Length: 258
Image 1 (cartoon, one colour):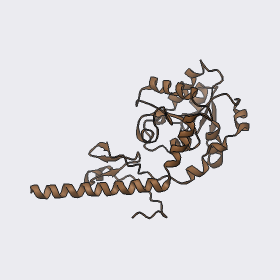
Image 2 (image 1 turned 60 degrees about the vertical axis):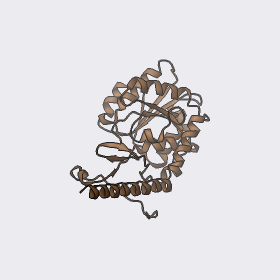
Image 3 (image 1 turned 45 degrees about the horizontal axis):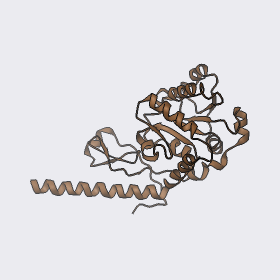
Image 4 (image 1 turned 90 degrees about the horizontal axis):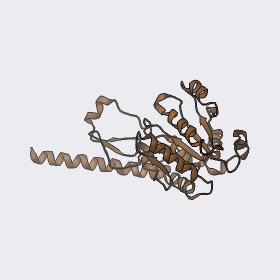
């Protein structure tokens, strides 16, 4: 049995060692085997802090006022490193398109990185808040309405669960962790990987349905709570058992054919 008092550190093995593995547990909650993804495991361990710190109750009216928005206005949020691989530009293009039809819309970007200066110059109406941590980050998340996660390179993306735990309507591509935790139209919105037009449409729908007391945001919070530490470990343990049984079955089959 897995010791639940210790939180294991899941490190990625050297690529040249993968060929000797029967199965590799990936951060998306799936088993990767011979280049194919299968067996949804939800095997990534999450810090319990996510569910204790990130909560809609941290919504801060004074912070929203500092952003220049009232109670009825919608705020788009992006949290992450401002670098090309994070595809931040798409989130900002979404904002620029949607505010043509919704002038009260506001965009807040939390994070820093090599693209920050250029993005700030290109999008002067966007609030770049820099790095935020701990309780401050929790306030930023809870005080927004829609979380945009346009990355196609993140495997797990902790911020997705943090946003969901904060009760945000989340928009992401249907890949990696987002495809595991988000159910399109129920607790968030998904777009086909790489389809930017679909991402914009999903964000537009999210803005419409992102009332603070709406069912989508409530369901997002409930889904995040279900992804707690014990359940993730249980799923991971079951995944390991399945991989071992598959390996044993293959060995028996190979021995019979020898």
